[in-house]
Amino acid sequence: MRKLIMAGLTALVLLYSFQAYAGESRSVSFGISVMLGGRYDNMRMCVATPAGIKGGPIADILLDTRFFVNDNLSIAVNLPVMRPILFAAAFKMLQFEPEVTFEFKKNITEDIDIVYGPGLGLSFHYGPDYRSDSKDRSKSFFAMGPFISGLFGFQFAGNSGNNKLIGIRAFYVPLFSGDSDLSPGTVLGGALEGHFEFK
Image 1 (cartoon, rainbow, N blue to C red):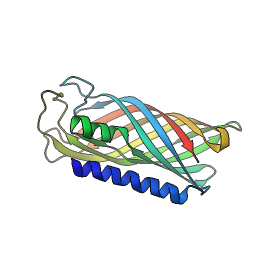
Image 2 (image 1 turned 120 degrees about the vertical axis):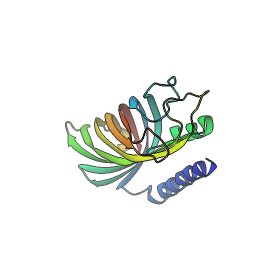
Image 3 (image 1 turned 30 degrees about the vertical axis):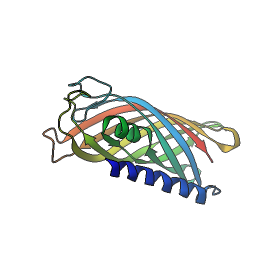
Image 4 (image 1 turned 135 degrees about the vertical axis):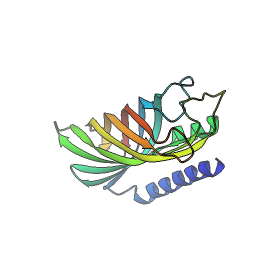
């Protein structure tokens, strides 16, 4: 678990180093995302629900890096921060789901764009299954699988070019593990997201 935490901290240091290098570039921006939603999950333990419940609420804070291909397309790299650190420190678990989203934009007004597009990432899990709770935990196991999503939202132009995006993301994750009798697992869910950009 310590190695996982160190790997996460190393990734954060590398990201901020890249920000310092590319911060003046017009083709790159940085920001923070906040997400809140729910999911069906027939494999992993949810720390917010009792044992035996398949799924529950989800929340996270992410660091965003956006690469602007042109006026109508950007590529967003989303690095989760809150959930991996909280789960490792408080629950001795790992849930880490970095993702890349291809964001297509369609202008509505001078200050508002529709934003939509697919996302693809990886979901990593280490911990007990949904039949567990914080007091009675089954054996922890490792699982992973592709994180597939779709985003639809509205982007609002902010002061000094710092945009804000409010949207909905639906996602599907098939999870595979050689150590669990529940493999393959299925995760289906959705979340409200707010992206706050700092150029």
